[in-house]
Image (cartoon, rainbow over all chains, first blue to last red; front, side, top):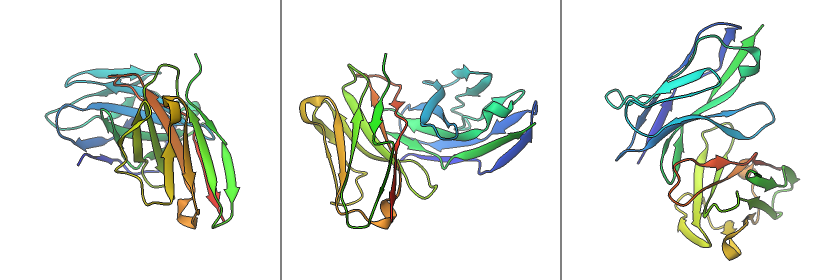
Length: 109
Length: 113
């Protein structure tokens, strides 16, 4: 079955630092790839997605590129803010999603 | 447009009791999913409805869990009897027919004591 391996946390960064959260996947066929975010006390929100190889998803300054050759979908942001503190989940699938374990990110001022 | 709504948002019950979680998907979304995250582990798929039919229930952990979607609108997930290991957050999600984006609700946080 499908699987997602996600960089383990927790990750703590200073404000304005560069962020990378690694994500690799195994899947059959041509699944879509997603990053979901869960802010403290809230539900899961779709952050960005990519539906085919070489697609780049972007939102709120975050980016991730669907790399089929390396089966990766790493999340990046050039300058993080305190408000980015949350748990980030990488996921793959079409009808049914397979999630990584989540990475807790804390940004300190 | 309203998003996926779930009720209750938080529930604390004793072991052996019954809890029913409700999910209202986004209007027009035929696909409805239940997922859960227990003990800080990964979010896991439970089941998938297409309208009122169960398309895939391979993730349901055991027969203490019963999901229904009568009329193809809202869905309920009943846990009976609840066990300690059922504690976690239960997410409902929905998507359009053929849609590639799945939208999640805020989750129902269940604590079994």
